[in-house]
Length: 309
Image 1 (cartoon, rainbow, N blue to C red):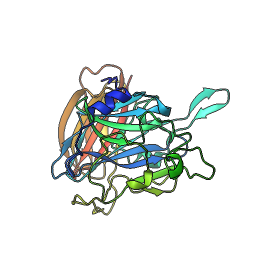
Image 2: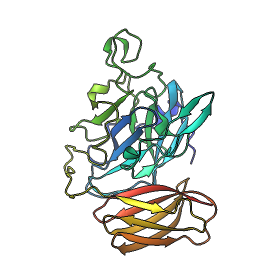
Image 3: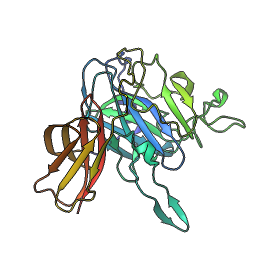
Image 4: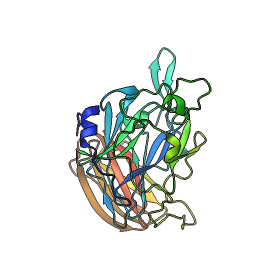
């Protein structure tokens, strides 16, 4: 799905009144780490599951007055749960001339519920890109940064200069940091801000901090706590597959497995109800790249990019 959204259209789409609290998905964590160690966490502040099918994450890069790339979110977030989208680059890429685009740290990718699309994609943000979360093609539900503004290297703590990187000594906040939404924030930003003051809604953490991905504390209630003695894990192999068959192993019972195209179209959905292992055959699947979501007992979901030869 391609949404040709300009800055003027974004302002028009944003609701005139503030979004009701604890009723809609919002971005709860922003990781802008070294290399391609980048990701976003989304939080469901409601008491019911949210289907991610209607949601699209857009990147407005380097002050562009419109969207430069986007990713369709897939899956479902349980009540008071999270969904983690991480950059999907799993190997170093030679850019020529001695330059290399590095793979994402496997430890960070292990937190992902969904791996992002190949470059260009929203999780190739580098500190000066705004992010906009859209629902149903025309409803703005959250904004990170200031769409249409190029802040320089990053948005900063420099209030005298509109929080952009022009003054000496300004601290970069949206580059080489993890930002976590404050506990008291209960809804997204739906109107483009006059200036992006990071400290209003975000706590800042050091670069490459991602050990809290998958959990978010919020005043909406239902705050997540780690109740399992081990963190849920799920793996998929062989990858790539020669015949459309793969095996899943996990340290918790596997309840359901879904397979989507890279564009988000569902091509296979199977209830498993097996303890820790499942073999899945996707009949008639064409060669290409797919997203496999592995849903585990207790609500954890793991996403793997899967290739078919």
